[in-house]
Amino acid sequence: MADRRTDMAFSPVELGATAAETTLDKSDPPTYWRKREALTREKWVEVAAAKLLSEELSDCYRREGVNHIQNCRDLAEQYMAAVSKPGFGIKKP
Image (tube, rainbow, N blue to C red; front, side):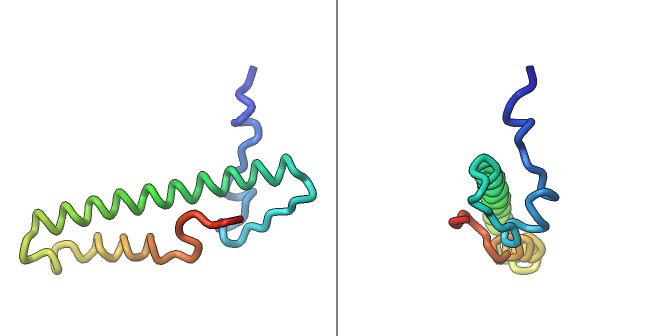
């Protein structure tokens, strides 16, 4: 028997281009809850990726010492781009 969760999962294409653009319609409760769960999963993945970038950035600062501004610039820009996205973090749907 197939796993029920995989049958009911929504792909990002079904949810919309971004989680911020997705509207949740409460008229169909099962669909609403599946979409809400998928959106929450997407947000947690974004948060986890930002945490990993933050750890890499702090390791780079520690490793590079006084040259961290030049040598860690690309990591810092990636981190700022990740946390500056509209809707970053967990928000109410």
